[in-house]
Image (cartoon, rainbow, N blue to C red; front, side):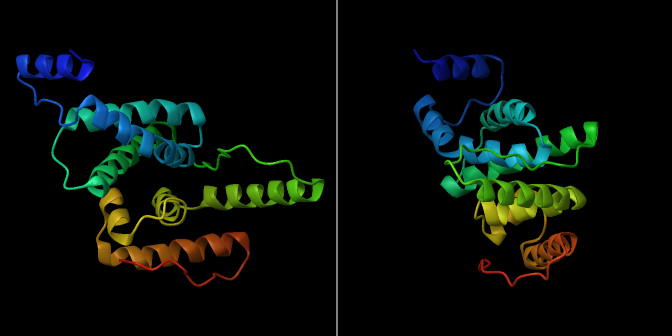
Amino acid sequence: MTVSDVERLAAVAEGETALAMTEEAFRAFYDRTARSVWAYLARLTGDASTADDLLQDAYYRFLRAGGTHENEAHRRNTLFKIATNLARDVRRRRRVLPFFVEDGASTVASKEDVAGRVERTADVTRALGVLKPRERAMLWLAYAEGSSHQEIATVLGVKTASVKLLLFRARRRLAGVLGRPPQPSIKGGA
């Protein structure tokens, strides 16, 4: 008997909805999505340890919600929506604005490369701190996660038709804070 079997039996005994995924399916889903969800949470909250906690809570709530998902994209969007709501709750409690966190090991670079990267990171961190939380989340989902307009709308709870305009405004505002003219979008919508 596996852990998921025990949890299913306990949920049925308590009158709760049984978990919708097998343990193996959940492990595979977790392996495919955990890194990107953690990076998303780290940027929204500005704190790696908070992202760790919220990541666990997001997957726990995802499992407890049960439900059936049409496909992998639907399952992933549901998880990101849960993560977004958890990050909003933390922000409401703490009012944390800056969120830019470096999340990967880099290769050895020259002093000029490092200095330029540090300067760009500081500029982007400052600029992102000025943006509204929804603008930061939209930019992250669109450009770091590569989410479609439909996926962004689902995660953030806005209309799909408004995502293109909201992304345009967020890019324009970010460019204004950085003191640069906005660049046209390369990402196609849908």
